[in-house]
Image (cartoon, rainbow, N blue to C red; front, side):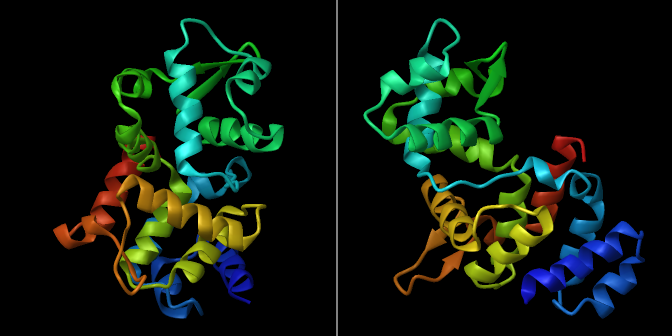
Length: 221
């Protein structure tokens, strides 16, 4: 299984394996740029349990983030439940994903908007909410690794499986793939052509490894 192979790669990283070993002996055939990416990202790999990817649409994540940003006071979970005509489970997933992505913060058991995204969220019309969502995704490590593999012509399902394995994400690989793919398309960081092939527009600018590394530096990795 590919997940088991990624697990082996993680064990090597945990033992401070040399980059040459990662690039040359890794049975997943991860290229040197991605190996370097993973190696530099090792501090986060030691805290992989902090990441989760849930089955919730980007559109609804942003509706929740917009409501929180528009409120003059902190909101409780019950407050948010009253704002939407959705199931409690789905609203809870959206709230959790907002927190994961850094769009919403928890303070004293209530929810408030992140200062980083609040102004843009408040100014954005509904059709423009992909902009703060894109900002958030560009700082979210599992998404960064997923698009890094997509940009190197890995299929979406394999890219999601690798991401899920490395970050030990508990959701099913099907949910991880669907969410990352749809979030990327909504944010316009991923493009899907008429043949349903995925591509990364940033890759056409000659980025993506330096692009990803720059974002990781911003995260303090």
